[in-house]
Amino acid sequence: AQTVTQSQPEMSVQEAETVTLSCTYDTSESDYYLFWYKQPPSRQMILVIRQEAYKQQNATENRFSVNFQKAAKSFSLKISDSQLGDAAMYFCAYWTGANSKLTFGKGITLSVRP
Amino acid sequence: DTAVSQTPKYLVTQMGNDKSIKCEQNLGHDTMYWYKQDSKKFLKIMFSYNNKELIINETVPNRFSPKSPDKAHLNLHINSLELGDSAVYFCASSHSDRGNSPLHFGNGTRLTVT
Image (cartoon, rainbow over all chains, first blue to last red; front, side, top):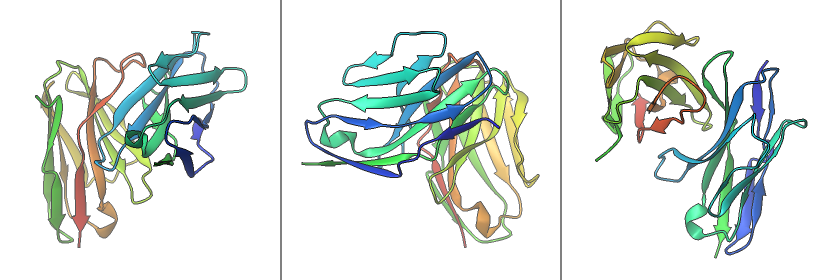
């Protein structure tokens, strides 16, 4: 079965510090893409970052970067210089060519302490 | 301009009623989706359409019927509503059904069945 696992239900970080959110996935496909989505209290789903599995270089978007470990099937999100506006639920997701759909993990709630 | 808009934002109705949620995207995307987010925030795909054709139909009760009159619209009709249908329903679109096309989500419709 193809799954996405986010084992930490909640995390907390001090403003201006760095936090890493974990995600592991399980697939036998070679063609897949990985994503992190953010859902703030407004409930809007916002794409944070994406990673193509065939690329070795870790994706980076401003303060957000990923640590993609393909052999370990791990895809963690690092948020640097955390801001109050980063407080949200974060979902890890992946897409494979086998079923052409985006499968989400259960999400992790991130709180930012001022 | 809202890229993916869905209406209504909130929907409260009684068991047994029939209701519809409308979705429109102005991004020129070929693929549209319906996702359901349950009370535990778990997101699961329900349907996807590519160029008005149904390509994904997950295990969803046949009380749920999507309709795509054109590429820019994907509506969701629900018959004989049940308490368990209470959830947030998200419409989304992407350029194609390939993994390199990130999903753009609407703001969700919170459906409450009493």
